[in-house]
Figure 1 (tube, rainbow, N blue to C red):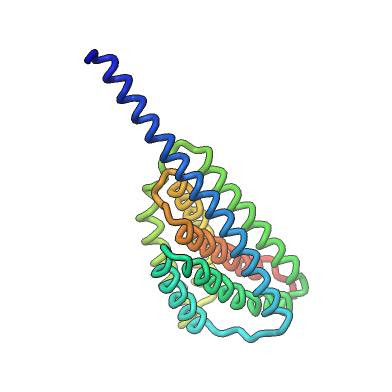
Figure 2: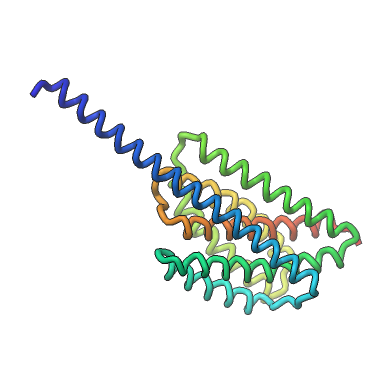
Length: 230
């Protein structure tokens, strides 16, 4: 067989594989965004219910226990229809824990409602910006994986230390770090979906939801400290 024919066939096959990979990535991305929208809406409703009914704050340990327990359950069920029910349980629980936090800010500051709106707006802008960058950029951001894993682990431990030892300065530093880490996580996860590195839309939704949740609470903490009015 002529070498040019072989080369053309090889290139056509590679191009076809790329198209299939892109199509699969786009499908996962559509499913992820659809599920993410539904979970964010459900979480928002639960936050409103918790705030409207003055549900008490469960505390960091109950919150973390519930989060990691439901996260483990959802991860175990990620390949079955029960995973959808589990992810709504997880995001609904996180929304319920967010309600008392929002109530605390609206009651503690005269401009508390504005702070919440600003945190929501900042979260939306960062999410859209990082998602857009992942969609249009040809750069490979897979190198962020190890950095994000280590950074989030260190920030999480530091956050526990700030809570346990009551260190406001460290707590602010942790919130600042989480804003940058969650922005990077949105970028990394979105590109992983597009390029086929993440093929399970339930797990992709969890990652993006957690990034948005932590981004919002971190921004709210920073805004409360620097722009809160008594």
